[in-house]
Image 1 (cartoon, rainbow, N blue to C red):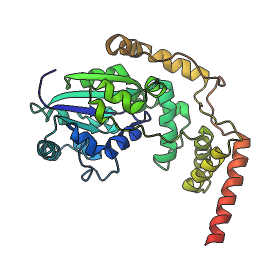
Image 2: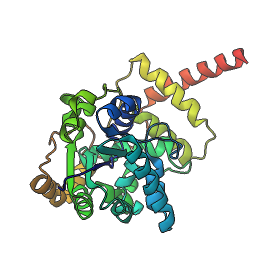
Image 3: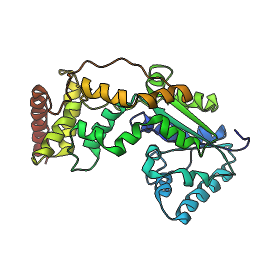
Image 4: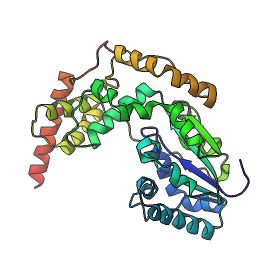
Length: 320
């Protein structure tokens, strides 16, 4: 890696604590700057904690849009007196964003380092499915097997291939094991340690929100599949209340043993390359679940969700 100013580009992935890491760096921006590390302004991003303006520029087909974003970041960096620029945007992991040409615009001013936080692909897939159903397009109603077969989704699971793409434009690529970091010293500490950032500037850990019960995801899918009218936000609020009651064990997995084994077998060569080239190997333990993918929520959960939702609706009506 060449000497000189560093650009550290955190490219995700989604569902690996990216928001927690971004919030931690945003909250500690002044401390980081005092240690020579710039987490730039979020004003252009119009986002609370991540650099969404970077992915927007990277996706643009207009060179002047890409260059304007780079120029703004370089100008802020030079005014800061820092030696390291850290950008974080998990959307850059997606191949369709096509960030390579954009990132190259930072040369020769910076040496470029790319860091990706990864979790076992079957678990990552389930998290993506939950997010797509809760916060994605309102017409998302695919079962998880169909979702799993989507080429764009499969592309996000090809870790070694994606890292190899990044190696074409970066001086250094680092792959971090999300699960190992969380079980160890913590995501933020592990990130700063792996990237050789000053220990004195390491922000405090920010606790991520717990993943929702997959029963909620299946309930939303069923409602959409049958075209039943519903309030997605109301159901999500009710689901948080149900989760807080701790009377029902949450469902975390819906992929099914058969599809899980098939997926991991198909990704086997890529996972082998991930270990041999990038030194990352995942825990091989398998969750306790049925053989077939789950497509319907648990009836007991539905009753609890219905009860809490009706209770919350009654409170809103009385307050109104």
